Length: 456
Image (tube, rainbow, N blue to C red; front, side, top):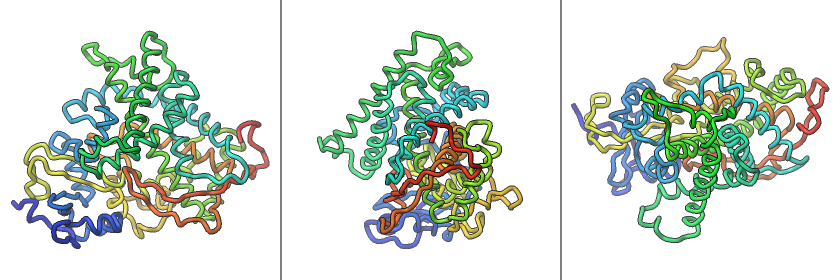
């Protein structure tokens, strides 16, 4: 059996710095090149060796064992600073109980209620746009997603001011997490403006959540929101989640739902501007299905193309572009011995751009997901992760993005600004579109039935 040191190593390493140069110069291109070296590849970041899983089946098999390949690595260490030990960041030892208690909040019978909240909030958000307004699309979509998740989580337990704080604080925290991931912990103690903003956002977000929790904890009413379920659930011995655990779960839902959904909607809108025929077909679908009214849960089965646009966007630009795990005990990966403490990574972007799974992988083609087309292996589509730690909010996220995209495209044309900046991927904690600014032009459904007054 070989070790990590004799594992196939990515090309382009330099003395001392290892693969830092290609990682910083073209990280997505570098990741996409790794499968040429094998199913599991060693990458050096300075003196540290990291194991990258490139083969979808191998990745799936490895991550099923979340006891040995646990949540960890520098990114998750930084996430824990602000998210605490919620479902997305807690170690294996706490995960099973948490997932069992949180799962009822995402049962199928709760989804129609969440969908109505999402549709109402999305409609209100795009109603505030003005004819000819130039939108910072990532900022708008992240704020829309934060509004949706906050309403689904707290319903009427938040004031309008608190909702606006949540959107602002989430953006500050996400930027701060990535910045702190790249800097030594010692620098975190310096009172820089960025550090002060980050700490203020973390404190205010927690206070907002805890205030809402305190207002609800004395009652027993089911408000149809996520918080009601988190307060009500009990395990087999009658114990529920503590206030601290509920607070951690709420932060996890907000952080996980705002940035990732904002990324997906932003990239979808960007790709539509470059594919006018696809945009025309999408407008025709939403005009036919919605006929000028607000989208709802019952419309989802007929929004076929809208859903395929979301799916292809998640394939082409998965928000979580790189995910880390930490090996808890000596283990074996594909015949290689991996010592405890090793960081193991996988990249949904890499997996989603393998030509053996996706013909012409760099081509954006929502119709590759049409039922009559040959589909990729299940393990080759992992925008929500894989294995025991797969995202619990997958269906919630798909419903949210589908309804939000249908709401936007039924009411607005979004067009690039002539002479504007070229849109490029920016890799922070998530994969976001840098420089995406679009001009909003109101549209009326082709059916001739205008949206209800106040819903445009």
